[in-house]
Length: 177
Ligand SMILES: CC(C)(COP(=O)(O)OP(=O)(O)OC[C@H]1O[C@@H](n2cnc3c(N)ncnc32)[C@H](O)[C@@H]1OP(=O)(O)O)[C@@H](O)C(=O)NCCC(=O)NCCS
Image (cartoon, rainbow, N blue to C red; front, side, top):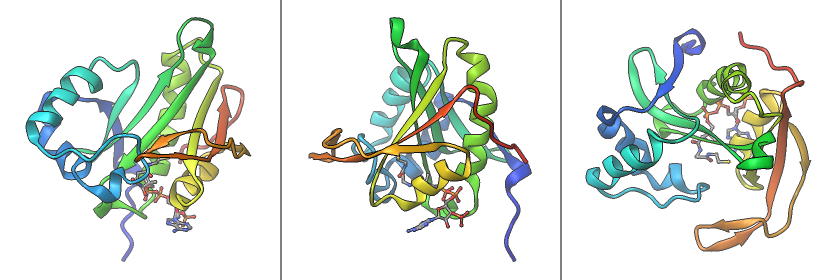
């Protein structure tokens, strides 16, 4: 029987006590495959990352199912100065939770909060590897529009790669069910 997680998902800022849960997905090559980060190999490294990057981050949240955090992250990184009008979105989820609609729900929750939390934000963008069908589907299901395929956009795992570009504007709509 398929479990309905939709009403059990929430997002909240990271805490240092998330470190063991954080390692369970950030230490997994399958999860980091399409991310710019390298796979974490030690709890100390993860703790430093949570303290120095996750907690001071302008908008990075831990995704929770019931009271279980952190099964993943979702982040929105706004530009500086005149570029505050746009921000990049990123996310990842522990493999054992894939395919249950959890990231789709988390992105919808993020969309309902982030334009209030970052009032200068007009455009949220996501860049996705052409092979990363699950992430493309998450953005489609949450109302992002596909804009094109910027060529040789950035370095991922030692390779300069083309990435599909998606955007969601503050005037676009998504449904939170
Ligand atoms: C991308 C990721 C976050 C998706 O999380 P998730 O919670 O499994 O996503 P959801 O369950 O909400 O939705 C996934 C959708 O992709 C579909 N999908 C999964 N794999 C697919 C594939 N190989 N081909 C086509 N569709 C696929 C699922 O069927 C589902 O769509 P549906 O609801 O229409 O059936 C997860 O796979 C992940 O952590 N990947 C590694 C990190 C990553 O790629 N981050 C994004 C970088 S841009």
